[in-house]
Amino acid sequence: MNPYTWMRDIITRWWTEHGWSRHVRTRDTHKQREGNMNTIEVTTDNNVVNYTEMEVKRFIERAGQLSDIKYKVRDFFSELEWSSGEATITRSEVNELLKSIQCDLIRAEYKATVTITAYVTGYAAEDEDDASNCIADDIEVSIGSSADISVDNIEVDDIEEE
Image (cartoon, rainbow, N blue to C red; front, side, top):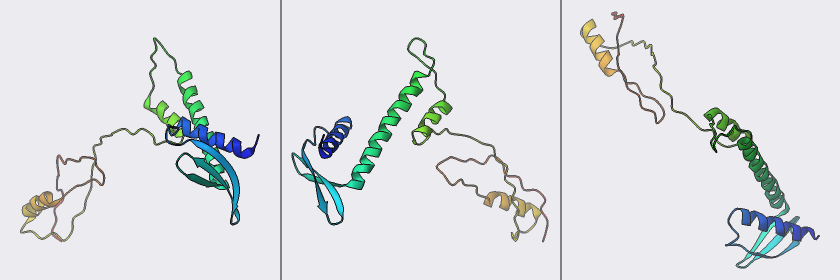
């Protein structure tokens, strides 16, 4: 088999598997030399696409990776215990699968109770009570993400004059 015909078949199969077959129909392929680089030309109904040998190699590697992913997903579901057509899967099990196929993991939302210890110096006030009240009113707490934060209680302890 001509290696360029083989390459055309691989490219056409990949396009078909990814829903592109309606848009691109391969008519012809041939190899040509462009500068110091070999290219493979694929002629479609609408235009001509040139691929370098490196692009074709990456394309073949990616097609192999997609095949590996399909088998990993199939194996994952095959190994589950099924009862009446249903199986229970934990988030950690799904995350193991996602990690094995190099996808982002499923995240969970967490809540926390946080204790913050702060030392305030140089705060001008008339007396200790004024300093305590003003410091408590002026302290702001924020979180650097899209999470919500609410402050239930701020206690000011150990007020001393500097």
